[in-house]
Amino acid sequence: MMIQKWIKMYWSFRLSCFNIKSYNEKYTREFKQLTINFPIPEKEQEDMKLSETITDYFTQK
Image (cartoon, rainbow, N blue to C red):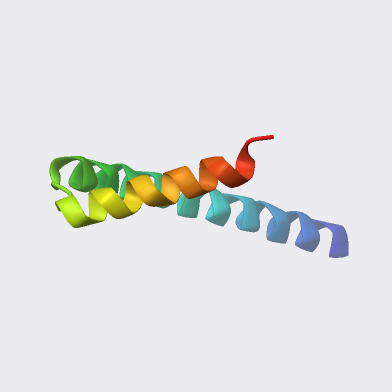
């Protein structure tokens, strides 16, 4: 009896995780489309380039 209860809990948890994941994938896909279509201001582009060079500096060996 107890084993069946644990199996049910396990599968309900697995299914809920699967549902959450599919929802998140849909959400991120929509978000990516929004960000692709949204132009980045010049100041932010400069900041992004600066942060990339800083990251490159610390990651290169």
